[in-house]
Image (cartoon, rainbow, N blue to C red; front, side, top):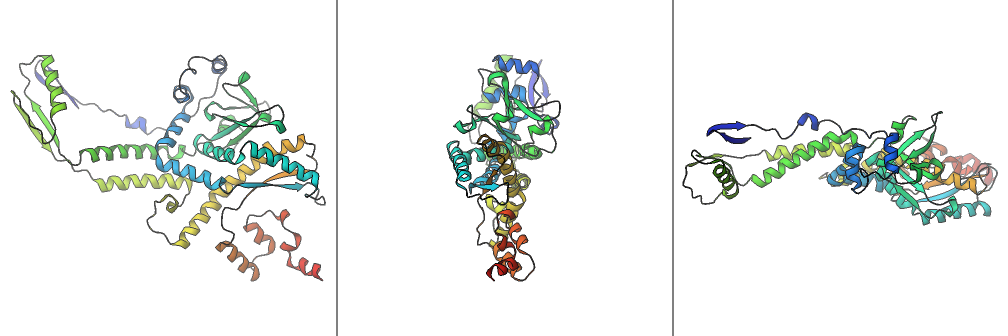
Length: 430
C-alpha cells in the first residue's frame, strides 16, 4: 500500500506486487526452431551474441534457463538430482565381449584387442564423467547431447558437450531421427552418426518427445511455493524481534518537495528504540507481529517432501529423516536402486552400446562377429541381505538357478551353464 497527497487530502492506493495466478503457471515449453531463427543463429545475430547464454535462453528458448536456475538455487532439488546421477554412475563400469555365434570364444585375442581399443577410447574421453554429466543434464533439461569430435571414431580424442537448450531434434519423412539443429556449429546441423544423444522419458518418436521431459517440470509449482515460503521466513526472521510501527505525520501546509523529504526521513531514520525529534505532529500505531513460524516451517518441509518424492530418494540419504532403523534404511536404499537407478543404468547402457560401441565395432570390421557390452559394476554390497535371502531360497528349492541370477541382475548368457543347472553340474562330475 502506498499513500499520497492530492490537494492535502488523504489518499491511499493498494498495490499487489505479485500476480499469483501467473505464478502458478508452468514455464512454457522450449519453442521449436524456425528457419528464420536458424538463419539468425548461423549469422551470429546480435540477439544471441554478446550476452550470456542464460539471457538468450530467457528471451527465446523457454523453460531451459528457468530449470537451470531452479537447480542452482534450490538446495534440496540440486541434492536430489546429484544423488541420482552419483548413484547411477559412481560404481563405474567395464566392457565385455559378446560373440554373435554362441560357439565362438569371446577370449580370442582379436576380439580382446577390439575391447582394449574401446577401453582406451573411453579413458581418453573420460567416459565416467561424460555419463555423470549426461545424467545430470537429462534430469535438468530433459536431454543431453555430445558431439563426436574427429573424422574417424578411432581417432576421436574428445566428446564436445552440447547445450541442451540449443538442441532441436529433426526427423526425416519416414519419421526417423536423422540429425539435430544446433547453433554455433557449421551449418547448424549435427548428424546422428556424429552425435551421442540421450533423452529423459521419451515415449514416442516425435520432435517434442525427442526433446525429453525435465524431471523438474512436475514439481515446478512446489519449487515456486517453497521459494515464496523462504521469502516469508526471511521477512519473519528480519522482523520477528520488533513490532511493526505505522507512523502518521501531519503534512498540511508543506510543499510537495517538503512532503517527499519528510516521508524519506521517516522511512530512513525511524527505527525501534530511536529518539524522534520533530516540529510537526507524528502519531504512531504499533502492530504486534507474531508470525506462525511452526506452520511456516512445516509447510516448507512439506514442499521438500514433494520434491524428494519426485525422485524416489529415501529421506535418510538426504539427512531429512531424524531416525531410521538400519534394516529400514537398507530396504529403502535397495528399493531406490531397483525402482530408479537400475532403470537409469539400463537406459544409459543400451544407448551407449547402440550409439558408441556398435559403430566402433563396425568400423573395425567385426560387426558380424561380436558386440561390446557396457556392464555397470555392482553398487550394492555383494554380501548384502539379498544375496543371503536368494541363497536360502535356492537351497530350499523355492527358486531355480536362472531365477537366482536374474534377481541379481546378471545376464543369463554370461552365467556358466552348470551354474544355472545343478543337475548338469552333477552329470559333468560323473
